[in-house]
Length: 565
Image (cartoon, rainbow, N blue to C red; front, side, top):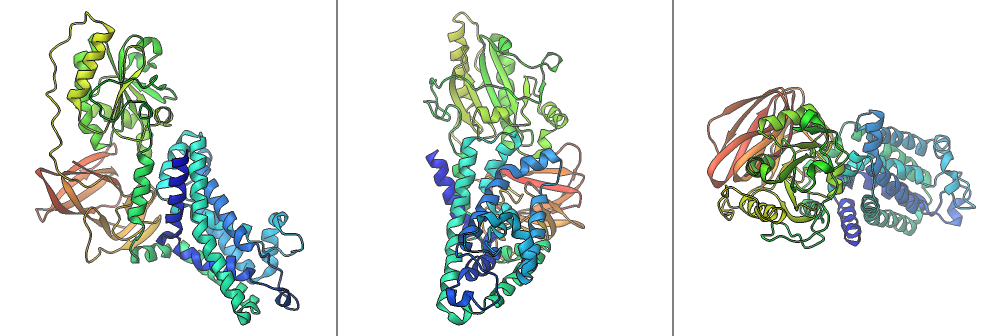
């Protein structure tokens, strides 16, 4: 729990100084700070409504409250109401514009803030306490949550918010509040030192209102995204570190003596429950696999997603273990936990399993209940349990088939000393000699850390390739529509450039249309995309290489991520 608090606070601090938050800083400075700079002399005889000196704290408190609430519950509530995921942001923009009008016309502000009058300090009868403004700013800037938002989305998909998720979100909000509050107080301190400024509070208030109206219009036109692309994302390495810390948290078996990829069996407690399953595949009548069906069997649980290229490479080995050792007492269960929304569809999972030749039982974990039971963080992830149901080994990522087979054979002999086993089918595990490779690169705004143009923001915008592009990054050219999980050409074909290292480049894509691409200056190739959303191979070489891939995607396609081998 302490580590979650530290991760959340650090993530919030990073976000509070990131390019994503820059457009809101002038509003915080003027409305949160400068407006609260009053003394007894200036308060009387001006005709201005009184403003609480607690205003900076209330603005930031409102921002933290709404930021935390919408990050935790926004996606869940919108899914329940069958509303688009950007409704909260648009509501925030509309309210921000109304507050801007209220800053210019005090009577409008009084009406808007009347429900929040109870938060006024005694003796301050005016409406301008700032809490409403903070609530609205938090709603408008939920997309700035970055990796934390991606982590919390798992909880949102389940519909169950745990203590760890709440702790993470609250810590993130408090971390964000620190630089914002410092900025607001700096605005007040500066105004208090300038007497002439302090006596022109109407000018300050009207200027703040005009700024909010301008910010609202800019958000509608997605102009802050232009600013963010023009500036280098100086917090990208720090954001990547936060993402790795979140994804690298403890999972089932890691808290005991089960170490990732260990070559020997350990004792790590009972295998977590497999429940909350949407559907079962490859079972008689597609009925659920019960505890009785698994009783006395060695169990290998494989977490996968059908568009995950690492999973696709790992599954043939899992299938081979099922075929060779199924009759000897091995029960293989594939738990399909979706990484993308389209992977929640049972029909898509069924097609993906058939394409990969999977014949062992598959539990469709569309609501990520079992994923959470295991506290899993990886695709693929293997959990090996003995015949009594005790977890004995874990393996995250690809490889290690020979080690897994050796441990399976050992557990089968422990369960039945007289069992007759065939000869091993896997040779000794070889070290990875593939060389360095680019980490998995997500294209949606929630986790687009490798974007060369700074922070990638939701909405439709026009982009240009940069003159120079760093390794392990991607850039865009043309008009693209950006959502939390994917990017899509808008109004016609659009281009993408990728700098990568590796032997393979694979793209997760959905929709209907053509992708034309060149890699390393080679010939131009075209792939027709249709059917079930899946991963397609664009580059395959014998040796690891550094290269540049440029592609043109047709309208009607959605691009999700690149993976590398």
